[in-house]
Length: 117
Image 1 (cartoon, rainbow, N blue to C red):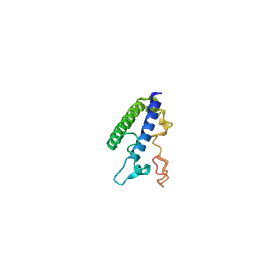
Image 2 (image 1 turned 180 degrees about the vertical axis):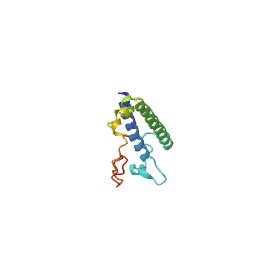
Image 3 (image 1 turned 45 degrees about the horizontal axis):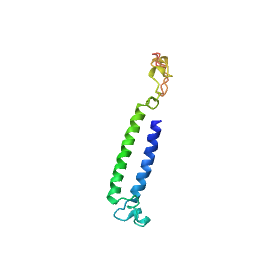
Image 4 (image 1 turned 90 degrees about the horizontal axis):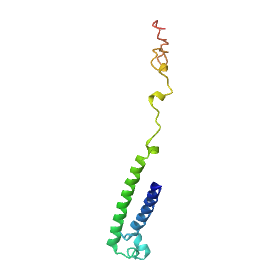
C-alpha cells in the first residue's frame, strides 16, 4: 500500500517537474514565452523561486526513487528469482561422465571400447 502511494507521488512529481522545467525561460526564450512571458509569474513567484522549486522537486524525486528501490529490494517476492538449484537439474548424474564415446562429431566411428572401431 505504501509502495503504491510512493509510486503515485513519484509519477506526479515527475510530471510537475517536467511542466515546471518547460515553463522556465532558457537563454532562447523557450516555452515560457508561449504563455505570454508570464510563465515565471504563474505561481506567484519570481524566476529564482521557480528555479529553487525545481531543485527541491528534483531532490524529492531522487529521494522517492531511492526509497522505492530500497523497498523493492527488501520485498521477498521481487528478491527471489526462483532459480533452480543444481540438485533440481533435469539432467541426471548418469547422463554425465559415463565415459562412453559415441564418436559423434569425430568422424572416426570409435565407440570407445578400445578396439579402434
